[in-house]
Length: 133
Picture 1 (cartoon, rainbow, N blue to C red):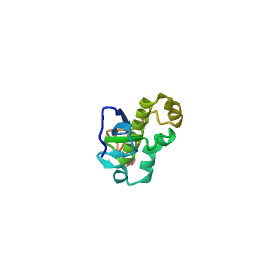
Picture 2: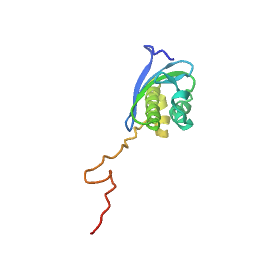
Picture 3: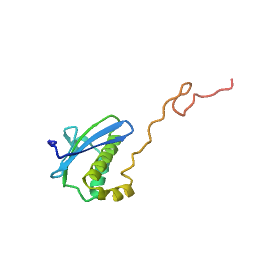
Picture 4: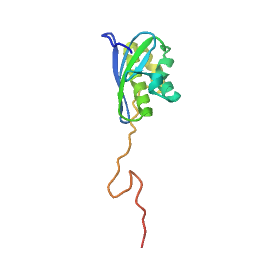
């Protein structure tokens, strides 16, 4: 388990209903999510790859310990929320990382959320079946 110290860089990432609070500090490259190792938290390799993308792009993989507290949403949304939090922390560490991260599309928060269900309908867009008679 990673111990968060006063030198940690804190940032927040969001995606759909998921909210990730990310602390980054110089270290050996350990990643802990909700006090569990990243390999135990995410079963899919794509989720692990998504949250490591900003670190690989800036060539800082293995230089920082990352502690994450994430809640809400599903695992895919949580992975993307963590990616945004890691990106924001990297920009606090070194502002020179911003152009590369921006070009890759990691800086922008994805605003897409689930559309609400409307009354008189079966779902957000789906209608009940119509019959003339």
